[in-house]
Structure formats: structure tokens, C-alpha cells
Length: 210
Ligand SMILES: C[S@@+](CC[C@H](N)C(=O)[O-])C[C@H]1O[C@@H](n2cnc3c(N)ncnc32)[C@H](O)[C@@H]1O
Image 1: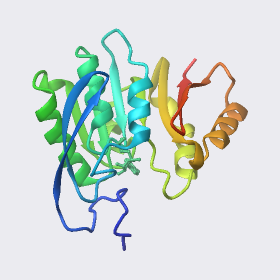
Image 2: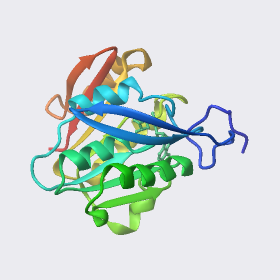
Image 3: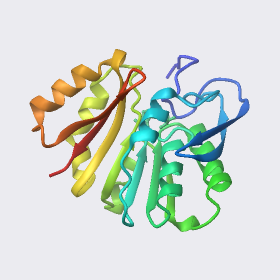
């Protein structure tokens, strides 16, 4: 398989390896993230990720949470910090992203190692055997190759949510947030799908498994 040198959604990115440090304050806490070339937004935190992290709803009881397409682990690390009694899963197809996530969990979350599960692989494949179900799944989806793969997630992602579980995700308006909203309203009811916020050109969505 040949890879575009900027393609981060690949198992082994084909770009020379450089390491960066991204310091960022989120929900009033300072984090330090190690990142590598070939990983999404490795030079600075993506604005869409920040908008999602600032507005995502975090369950206030111990929960099982998933950062799907975790990149260098920002969303899941904030979830784990803010909800210390929850278990947090991380999945990404990109092996460099998974290396960064492991480092960043170690650097930013000192305790409760057993509560974090970090997997390399394609969407839910790595956890298929575990039969785990989530209270909430969070995602800044890869849309570079179009929306189809993301919209296809709605055919099977709900199977991984507990009753009343949520799927929270961010879409840039220019990448089709209105289209996605209409598509989901056609497919589900307006009790199932809400827009939590529209900020800085991004929409944060909340899909609720009722
Ligand atoms: C837009 S980036 C978001 C990364 C990270 N969550 C963040 O906010 O910085 C999308 C991520 O999804 C990952 N990804 C793409 N296709 C995937 C797949 N089939 N299974 C798992 N992860 C995938 C990419 O490698 C990338 O890290």
C-alpha cells in the first residue's frame, strides 16, 4: 500500500520520525503531550479536539469510556483525569499514535494503570473479543477521505453502547456538520441526536442510545 506522506490514518506512517511536545491547558488543567510526525495534529492541538474536550459531557459516576481514533490520546486522557473512577479505553489504527498515547498516559496520569486500556487496530476490532460495552464513546473522526466511513460507524457503533450510552463527536462545519446532522435526523429521532454546541466553526454532537 502506498501512503500519502500526510496520511495519519495508517498503521505505519511513512514519514521520518521526529518527536514534539505539545503543552496545553484543557478544562483548567495543564497537560504535556508527546507527539510524533505522522500522527494527527502533532505540532499543536487541533481546534476541533479542543472544542470537543471543552464541551463533552463526562458521566459523573464511574463509567467505561472510549476515545475512538485517539491519536496521541488527548480526549481519553482528559476523560481519565476528570473522571478518575472510570475505565478509559483508547483505540487507534496508527501505531505511532498508540506509542504516543502510552507515553502520554504515563506522563499525565500517574495512578491507576489498570484502568487504561490502549489498543492498536481498526475501530472496534481490537476489543471484539472482550465484549466490553461503553457508557460513552468520544471521537474527532478522520474525515480526510470523506464522510462515508464515519457515517458507516452508525450501523454498528450503537452495539457497543450500554442502554442510555452516548456517542459524542465533533465535525467541522466546512467538513459537513449540517449534512451529518440531517443524515442522522433522517436515520434516528431528534431524541437520539443533539448538537451540544457550535463553536469556532465546529459542531459537537451527542448521540444518545435510548
Ligand atoms: C481527526 S484524528 C483525531 C485524533 C485524536 N482523537 C485527536 O483529537 O487529536 C482521527 C484519528 O482516527 C484514527 N483512525 C483513522 N482510521 C481509523 C480506524 N479505522 N480505526 C481506528 N482509528 C482510526 C487516525 O489515525 C487519527 O488518529
